[in-house]
Image 1 (cartoon, rainbow, N blue to C red):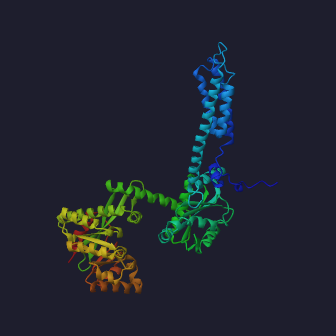
Image 2 (image 1 turned 120 degrees about the horizontal axis):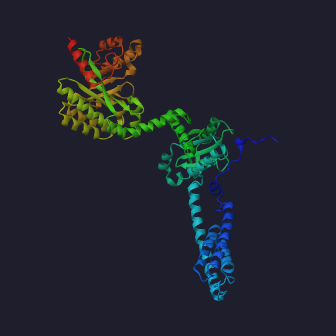
Image 3 (image 1 turned 90 degrees about the vertical axis):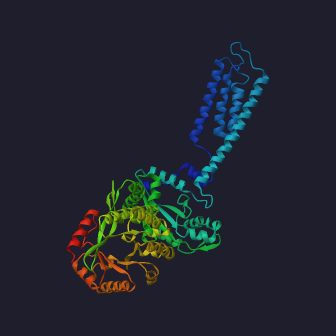
Length: 569
């Protein structure tokens, strides 16, 4: 007979999960029950010996008999309590046990009958109370393992099943976890209400049950998330994902209402899983996040994404400390006025000297912080640092305008603008020495709010520049509606501009449009003399790029400022 494939052995479900799935009453472990029965018998024998040796039922030691009665009732319920009480009342300390073993005086009939009645009452009461407590615990356990709305196994049940699979499979089970996320769950909730929406996971499970028929395969892990456990040999990961997306690709009837579900699937194998059951869910969720970010229906867990997630979480966690411990620093890239080749300003760019990750450029942490409120704290730190630097250069007699970038999230309220104006007043800086740079995405989120904030800054005397122009979706309406001084032409247009006629025409058109609207233009990313010459021909006002200088510390920028001022005609 061929040896059975160990990887396809039937799953040994954890007992609690199996009982919850079967809706079976609590039965306990058979071995433990037998052990309890033996323990009860031994305790009764011990109490019998102790009572005899200490002089009979006249001593208080006979009350130790309540212990085996209680133990029997706790394991076998009312029946166990009654049986133990009868054995105790009739056999152990019953009529055969003398009142006084030294004289042989026997117990009065009424005494042991009364004691038997008390034992019976105690055994029945203990059995009833403990039975009800056990039923309540079973209901609580069942509720933790079966979702009250969908009736599906919960995340806790999934973790227990995966834990058993990992135990049976030693170094990694040949199973995969598929996490199905209903992305429009909130929309369905807001449209149809909670009564219908709470039926959604159950409807999804019924649709998937034909492909994944076992009770242990489908789980309700979150309001809009269903987990599916599948054997790797049943089909490929892609085939499993295709099956799910095909089944749920059509409107699904939920409580009699057809509902379209916008779903994505994250897939992770349980092989080489060292972090236990919770690690499987984390992997599947990382795969799900990868699909969401990549605009795909299906995402697969990959180790490098896991490492990236850990780094991102570390960066977010370490940001408050970085702000407090001066791990952040600003460098400045000079801006040169092309009319006379003088340094007239600088853009402040942030760097993070992380204690374990090393020097981090802004691209490593700014996008992460922009997803949280931490970006507001960071931008305020930058704004205050820029104002202090501008004040220092002003006192040194340098005429420099210092620019810094604001995130779209910074423009959702007036905190940044208020902090900026307070810092300018405290440092006694001329307001026109500070310039706020906004990306196109910042001005299209809430044009009314942005306009009010920018107008307040303009009235106070600050400069306002639109950064990365040409890379987004800014319309002419925004250019005319907002108080903008400068257009910064995105480096993607400046790169190879002299070798591509279309780019040349676009850059020329932007320059002419800006001048017609009364704005100056700044070209970012200039790296060669040919590009510089072309921009000068188009009457671009200001240049910035590695052709002149990389971002440098403040002292070096001062040196460049004075050097170029001395060389200027």
